[in-house]
Amino acid sequence: MENLEIYNKLKSVPKEYLKTIKAGRLKWMTDIKPQWRIMKMTEVFWMCWVGWKISNIEYHYETFEKDTICNCRLNLFIKDWDNWSDAIPWTWWSRFSTMEKNWLYVSDEAEKMAYTDALSVAMKMIWVASDVYMWNTNTKYTNTWTWNSDDLPWYNNFEKHQEEMIKQIKGWKTANDIINNLTKKYKVNKAVRQSIKDLETNNK
Image 1 (tube, rainbow, N blue to C red):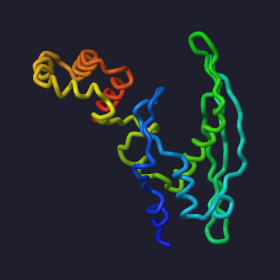
Image 2 (image 1 turned 90 degrees about the vertical axis):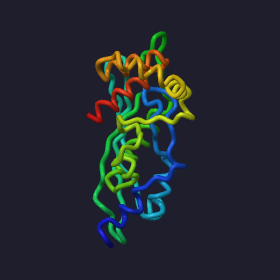
Image 3 (image 1 turned 180 degrees about the horizontal axis):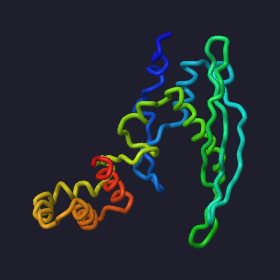
């Protein structure tokens, strides 16, 4: 077996298995549908508990000021012919509860989300979806961000008012002035403003 044979089988995620996060702090970023990872592991190593397996799953909770988080620790194993690999350990967390303005919000999926993310990141060690992490793809694991005019109606404002914007830009001295003034004038929300600033920072 060549060194990159398994890598090449596991690295690429078809577009239909990528999904846009539409709410929360990660809004407009892209995530990978978890079931795709299961399908690829089954395709390459055979079914779970035969060609790959998860063991030593542990959960523990920690409280930080107003938030309680759920940590999930697990070990991932893959099988090479008759031999099981050493453990690939990983820990990841999800928010279990947080004190919002008027009430305590409690998630009934905290353990499931922590488990899914811990397993997903452990799979990175054997190159699952590595193209997503390696290149500038919009994911919840990166700060890069691009927009689609079909998804973001405010983008059309830029197109419609291009000449006016060029005149305004000449009166602004810094890139930060341009970002702030344009996003305020054309009613871009805070998440998008921050994403534009992140793009500027990453491209310096």
